[in-house]
Image (cartoon, rainbow, N blue to C red; front, side, top):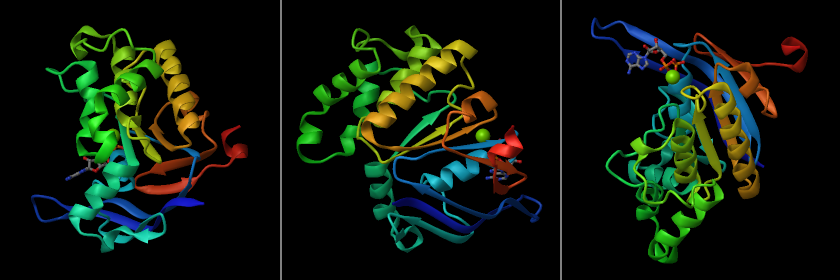
Length: 232
Ligand SMILES: Nc1ncnc2c1ncn2[C@@H]1O[C@H](COP(=O)(O)OP(=O)(O)O)[C@@H](O)[C@H]1O
Ligand SMILES: [Mg+2]
């Protein structure tokens, strides 16, 4: 089942001198439910711009975006925000945790937008999620007292706490040493698989990309599939 589909997506921005800059050119990609996809590209190739579009944070300039076969561009901002909140989790290179809040409060944050029992039970749901990432003993810790690997585990717990169907990870191991990065990816693979979520990982690290089912290369805003033969 196709979860997310981009067709002929272009993203251009207008620069201060009134020139226009094309960041993404004619990008098409489908992500199936539960699938793991990697997108590799150099700095400046348009990875974060693409991730923001995949995650319904930004709109394509031209082209189409379908989530669950529904046309996202036809939605109001409010409906798109709700679709994102219910279905998409983000993991960033710099963790993006709120500094003055405990690990538990950070993981509870997405549940503030839930309704019904998920909202009322947010403390216990967030606690269980932190236990799943091995941080049940650090619920009250502030992010700045945690190691990089631990902070990323909190961020993973936050991304997954509403059991989204799509996880988007932008250089998730970029700020971690090699070994910690692998451990964090092992954990992410595990929880993503348990919950049946699709995972799109953006990286410039070939070893991280290798863990996915399908591989893409982004070069100067052009996305193309990479076959096993090319990579070998
Ligand atoms: N809002 C914007 N205005 C102007 N230039 C932008 C904007 N967003 C991104 N860019 C430019 O587009 C290119 C791709 O950016 P980005 O998607 O962040 O790349 P990556 O994540 O691969 O490093 C970069 O050259 C960046 O400077
Ligand atoms: Mg980037």
